[in-house]
Image 1 (cartoon, chains in turn green, brown):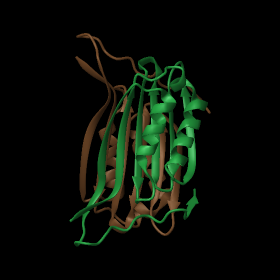
Image 2 (tube, chains in turn purple, cyan; image 1 turned 60 degrees about the vertical axis):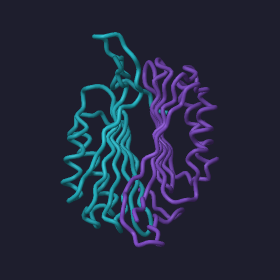
Image 3 (tube, chains in turn yellow, green; image 1 turned 90 degrees about the vertical axis):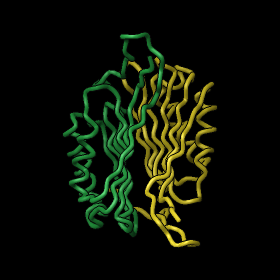
Image 4 (cartoon, one colour; image 1 turned 180 degrees about the horizontal axis):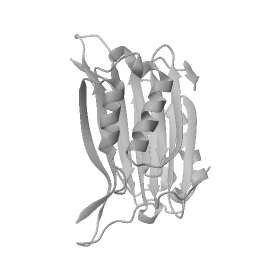
Amino acid sequence: MMEALGKQILVEFYDCDSDKINDVIYIENSLIQATKASNATIISHNFHKFSPYGVSGMVVIAESHVAIHTWPEYKYAAVDIFTCGDTIDPWVIQEQLKDYFESKNVSSMEMKRGLFKVPQGQKLLFKPENKFQSN
Amino acid sequence: MMEALGKQILVEFYDCDSDKINDVIYIENSLIQATKASNATIISHNFHKFSPYGVSGMVVIAESHVAIHTWPEYKYAAVDIFTCGDTIDPWVIQEQLKDYFESKNVSSMEMKRGLFKVPQGQKLLFKPENKFQSN
């Protein structure tokens, strides 16, 4: 049986509100709120505003990461949600961000990362949560 | 004609050197060196060591990001290279990291992100590089 260490959801948010996805503070708050709502443990976050348009940023979570890049001039935002373990629900993040960005057209794809063969009935061990040292 | 704003390479590094991919300083230096070699402009970087095993981190670049999560107990590292524009070569990053991690088994997949229809002969405009304000 094949089991995956991680799961990654690649989300395309089209037809967003341009002003909202060009506002670095708004984007940062949206990602933090959505990530908390998914039950993830936030370790750090880091966002940048580009001139004249666009925001890039990432929330590092104990269960992996949420990253965003926005192109307000195209009303488009790319979001990646990389998780491991079963304690968080990544789809909550997608649903909340759709509302925050007022996206009228969302598509997403789920990928498995780190596939290993395990004996029937066994599970892969995941990275322990809430135990980390910052560098 | 369809053109993409971004391009993302998802890389699976299997059969790595466990000690190397459990060393947060080594991982951070490897990603910074590989990212510089690709001709990308580094904006910030942020790495965390998990207890007892594993490292997560990200290099934010003007052209998007490079993210990593490692599972030394499985000799496995997941790397995402998200780029926009034509000035950097993301495959340089993969090749260098393969050497740094001594991975004996690499697989990768390239995804297009943010697809838009453009008139024949025209190109999408990308986020300007090297012009950003940190938050």
